[in-house]
Image (cartoon, rainbow over all chains, first blue to last red):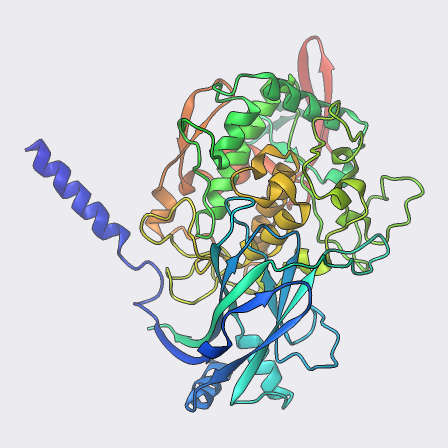
Length: 190
Length: 331
């Protein structure tokens, strides 16, 4: 009797763990763009790196739906990297950063930081997947008429901190991570 | 329990106030108590749950053999905030007992001030012309730069310890995180939220990917760990560095500031997994204790602490008289 009760309790607990607790169900995820396989891998080092993400032909409809004022659809940029070692730097991530534009985290191009907090030091090949909500960026870029429905570029800018006067400190040379893949998806709650 | 104020004298439990590190004199009694408490904890055997190393190993370690509650921190999921609140709460109690100072609290390091909204306190370093001095590692953690100072850790990024490398604005800007009004998102869904998603099965301690990480954990939490460097840069060693606790007190404070924005922002109290999953800690007597999300929602009512910038949180005026601490009122 006790064993049966115990088993039932475990089963109920497992069901409870797998019950969605947010929204009405599993969100619908539609991939609308990806880094070309031929472009991978890309090494992230001290110098800025820009990588193209090709958007699918039907991306435009997804994008328009996502940026509509009352839309609940979100646009997510997923970046998968292999970190070679714990970096003492942060990569700032931008989309569609113009060539002559000075990177600024306050700009419409900035989507977030890539600064994985990892378990170990000095251990090569630690996988990390970062996900950035780029809905606001795409909405604003489209409103500024600087958005291209065919593709977007993603720029990684290494930052090594600032000095006492607020000037950027140089980033020491060396590869810190390998960019393996990038994807853009439109995600809609169900 | 709340303080019971009676004619200006407090009866019952005291609400401890965590203060900005910039409001404390680096050579004053609060920092002295903190240093003493850490020294006492560091002098204890590693097998003692109230020792510095045992507590740090609860966050993460590769030390063997594993002990009770080691490697139980939660990262990259929606337990990140609640676990670290519990962790700091018990560590603070242990420090208080170890120091012998019943008023000891963990300070917080608010690195997110700006040029247009600087700290109300002056730069604690006379003659220092650093523009955004609050981006420097706080002075008491850099000087004296030797083993006489338990707040100093030589393993950090050298520029951080020298005060010549500072955090960047983009490292500590929490506006993106604060824009989210949802605390949690569905697991592996692609949605982002302030507090993260429930962990994927079996990944409550640490999710190898970062897809369930909350926005505030992404920034400023992660970049500050990396920028300080050394022990702070890794999950397995970071809690050995005393600055860890000021960083996480600030993260805990930012959780409260996020909630205070209202407009739909609330803790995931309808999520029974978040509310009831229990975590193990040790109190100041070395006794094993458990807490879950529902036990730590109200820092004043349930945990007897607040932050000096919380609405209604007043700094008590205390006197030591006849062997007792007497609280006379609040500032």
